Length: 272
Image 1: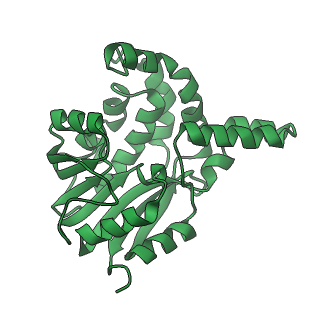
Image 2 (image 1 turned 30 degrees about the horizontal axis):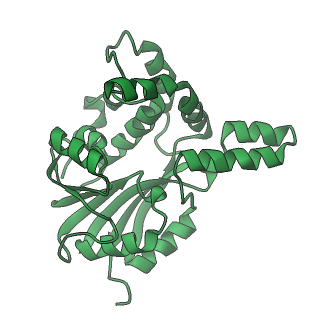
């Protein structure tokens, strides 16, 4: 599945006009990565959510979107982001062996408590040689949280650790691991890592972190009107765009990035 050049599509605007700015900024950066990856069909989106990301990152509907929650699945179906949208668990997928040529999972795996069954099941439904493409926060995420670092600098290390636990909890993160952990985890499930890179600088993380607090009005809009952004017009989001633009335009790969993007290939099934 070839993609158009990121120059032809304003991923930042397409995201921040519908999402809280901190989430839209991150998703815009990630959407650009998929433009350089060839995904053979059929394609499974594992943990598709409401389908918003896939509707922007990909030029045509993906084959299947799978998510464990009903409300996002219904919204994804209304978007027509996928040819088929299903509610189901990643650890027990309703597909035959080697059904898909590609699997994508964007910012999903870090939210799953027991990852191994999901990775093994992904290997089962993916054809040998097929790509598994995903992104996750890495081991630098927690250490670079700006408020925690401030506490560290003034000697309040206990409060710094409490804040890191708090932010990890509200982010629903169970895994913020480095490359070695992911490489071993993937190998055990039947994958080899073809390429990986880190992205999203500590400066970008600070903007995302503070966005959780400044974004509370968007949460109220969501509760009241079922929309994150009430007025999706350039004039209303001009300041928001200015804040996010520096992050969006920074070098895609960051040596000190707090997120990691992986392109893995299925080589075998577990225990074979």
